Image 1 (tube, rainbow, N blue to C red):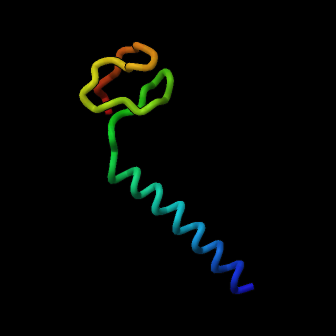
Image 2 (cartoon, helix red, strand yellow; image 1 turned 180 degrees about the horizontal axis):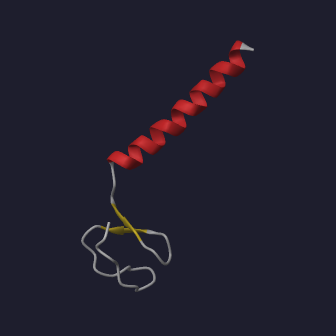
Length: 56
């Protein structure tokens, strides 16, 4: 029982750390069309050639 509780706690901490890392290290913006990460200064999405909004 303690092993299972420990495993669940470790899993929750790993998931929280992944989300925290993504929040701290943000490599760019998300494209509204194809949902891929685009560099911050790029005016167009290189994957689907759609215009990016600066509202982020």
